[in-house]
Image 1 (spheres, chains in turn green, purple):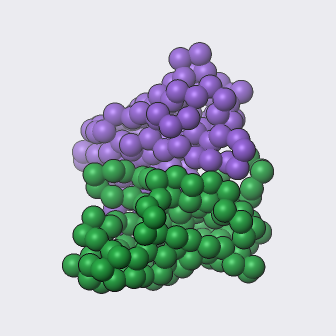
Image 2 (spheres, rainbow over the protein chains, first blue to last red):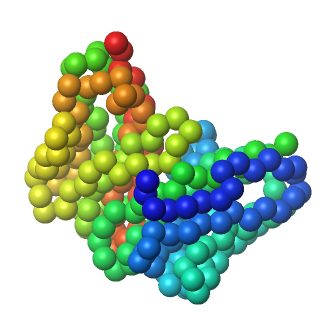
Length: 113
Length: 111
């Protein structure tokens, strides 16, 4: 158990819809990272938050947004969903500014029908 | 720091050693990591090495780092069927502990 909790485990929805994925980091970790894993593109970094502020952006589409709340949990919002958004979405956490591993949650599997 | 390469597939017989290789391009990386992903699961941290080290051993796992060639390897001794999974290497960069992952190597262990 990594200590990172992601909900829900599975989401099935239709094109054009909007979903919210939730992540609770490990206790004491201030940094949260979101990744997308698909069969054709591998593991893609989306965005990083540290203590409520955005710190780095990767290959995140404009239809996607994220935020980190005062209690340090984070949400990834995906809107105007397309078939190609079907993927596993992972959240990871680490201590910012402290070089060390990112700890991953079990992921949310998003299926767009 | 974005070009981390791994071979896609590796097959070994149970009981043999497995060696999974990784090359990276950014010499300013701080740590290098190995993660394991089993089907339908998240990434599990296996081990990591600081960039000024050459080798790290942890039970059946040995990590070798050749900084000059920017080459990282993971050796699994006495490979078991439970080791079948996808193995990702990653390098971390300052600031902010940014990670760059390889494409993953799918290890199949043949009984």
